[in-house]
Length: 121
Length: 121
DNA sequence: CATCTATGTTGACATACATCGAACTAAATC
DNA sequence: GATTTAGTTCGATGTATGTCAACATAGATG
Image (cartoon, rainbow over all chains, first blue to last red):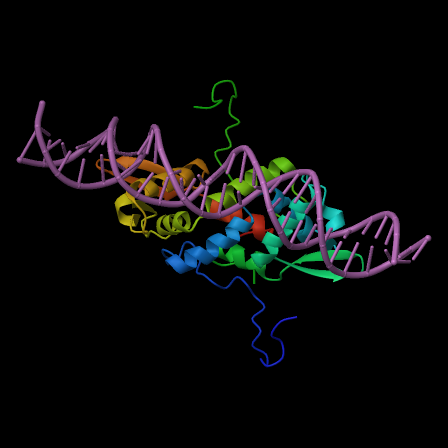
């Protein structure tokens, strides 16, 4: 559910092509703000474990019940997954009883490019 | 100031080859702790601008006086540079009046590999 | 040595954030 | 419709953190 009607085919779908590689030049304040937000989403150990659990899932997605064993309470897991979603790193979908999370495509490559200056493909 | 006596030659000196790519498997708690610390160092806008200023310096290094124009006070700049140093992302050296910062080699490639699974070289 | 400039350290303060328990919603099942 | 299971939202709380002013240190220079 989003603005998928009027716009013909201008859906970027990518969250990351926001900012130049860190090695290119000094980031502007706005660029730094956006880039820092993505790093911040991965700056918590619990969030990082949740993210890697989803990112490494063979099927490309994982339900919350499969990744909840990270040593914190249920509400805290939910809180962190929400943060990752807000940062544009994860997407979620409810199917019946369970809610499935998957990594937003191009996020990993995009952030990698931020660091290395030029990524794979 | 650390455990630098007993251990013979196990000094890694590299901060990054610590953890597997996020897509490989769910990180352990310890791996997540170390990895998150690096992302956290880049999770602040001011720190990110300082880092990119150093990382994009043509000579490979920059003195504090050249990168201090990030909208915060001197002490705050110092504070953030210290954090980046503690995280192993920057190194500093005093030469005469000025202090020069440079990016710790292999940091960018290492973090990139963390995200993309396989990096340049 | 006095002084000026370039950085760093300390202490204080306000805000952000991770965490949990309790209460809530959604779907399945009895 | 009552109950159970999966997940989220809310409110409270303790801790971490970004920020600055004041003070301290390091070199250079008069």
